[in-house]
Image (cartoon, rainbow, N blue to C red; front, side):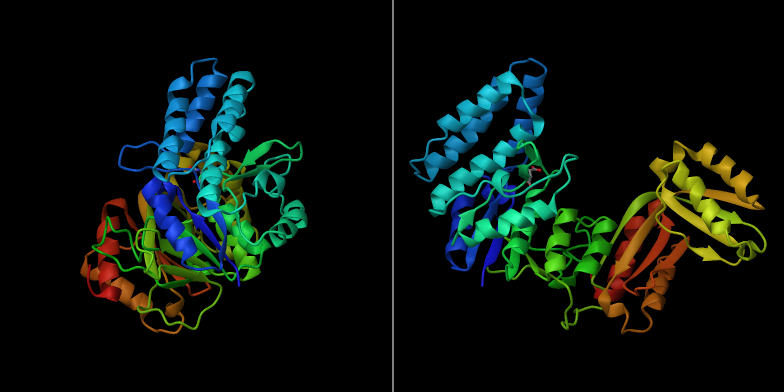
Length: 438
Ligand code: ASP
């Protein structure tokens, strides 16, 4: 049994946090592959090492002096090394990075050094070898992760190593140059390593106790979700809940490996388990509630629209051609509604509306901005009758007008549209109806 453990930036922000991470790794001999992020914020207002490095790059690329952020980066590592009483020196590494910055700075290479250097420090602290992901995680020319090439190299490299520190966030392209994932991408590295070594679990150590049932800014003390399926997570994440990089789910989901979100500051807490399937019954009918504001609905009416087979396609095409993404398409008899993000629609609205008028000759078109969508998600909903009734009576009790309803065929979620100004109150009332407090 082998576990892959990834530590986020705040979990390795200073020597104290390194000690906690070290304690966690040493407490379980099966935690063999460790993925560090770059040092994150130590306190409110602090700057992440990755942000300092981007600043170094931008100054250097503009031919300006980058010594201030560069010294700040050096200091961050020097503090950690001194406080952990390590004998490691990063001087050669810093000379190489400085030379690179002076000559022809590459943004992704410079940004990746945060993880690389933290990997060096962590490897020294743990006594583990370092596996540089530039040698085993690959990207194609366009900068997209190259699974095929990675799978041909990474599993064999991991097989040779009983333990290793593998810095997150980067790999290399076909020309050997360093490429990075998008921000927060060390989560993705962890998932790739977990899948490559057939890990029993991918532990993602962070600074929160797990995924919460609702936004704590809206409801008071929402409980941690103890277990959630990948599909439920996808629904919640898409509608705004964030705990993991979006692309971190796919490699482990495919390999059937669970993800366990854990809190470095409360290592005894079980955290959140993200799994493919589970017989564990959720404590409430719903697993979580989330949502987003600022959508716009466009209701198109025309008698007997259903008798025209290409009606829907023509309408969808009008949005597609202008690059306006469609979020939902609830329909009625002789009406169809298109729900889109307001910011994407307003720029193109007159163009889109004109095209709709021309291509489907509607009887009426009504545009309503300022709509918020709330997603009520839960695998438990399928087995339980009356879930929708509960949601709507909660909203009726709050005297909130429901502008739109959409229940996916998966019976995993119910989406309700309310006005932006009712968003927080709607979430609070639905939450209370299912959880009974908050
Ligand atoms: N250090 C990178 C960032 O700040 C990647 C990561 O932390 O996962 O985005």
